[in-house]
Amino acid sequence: MKEWGCGLLVAVFVLLACVANPWVIVWLLAALAVLVGAAFLSNLWDARPSAVAKRFYTQMQAEKYDEERKQQQLREQKRIDRLMEMPTAGSPHLIGYRILRQIRMVRVDDCDTDNEADLRLREEAEKAGARGIINMKIRPYPGGKFSAQGDAVVLE
Image (cartoon, rainbow, N blue to C red; front, side):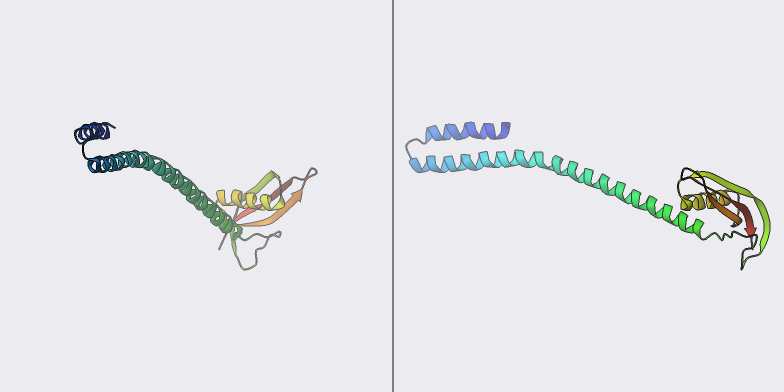
């Protein structure tokens, strides 16, 4: 602000000194208009990068959040795929596998769907160190809830 204010003061003094020649006044007014316009655009430009930077930063944060959310969903899907590969059977035999030992009975209750009961039972078996489940049963309860149980086993 001070820079163009000083330039304006100098321009007024030159204008007063050159009153006799109208072309000098026209040129001085044109130069003054250019100075004022440049100062205005400079102030406008100085304010602009902060808004652009703020918008860019916000956009980067949103993209980072989206990327983290996608990575989380991908990890969750891989975990579910891995659990769903665990062999299960409703009988005491798993065709194509040899049961080395039974670890323990696993049970989950209060599941909203039969798929949730299946997945949670597989998670419990995995926590117990099992690689399969035999004697698996999923039962509905009155009220729309499900329970699941089975024997967690180590397979060969």
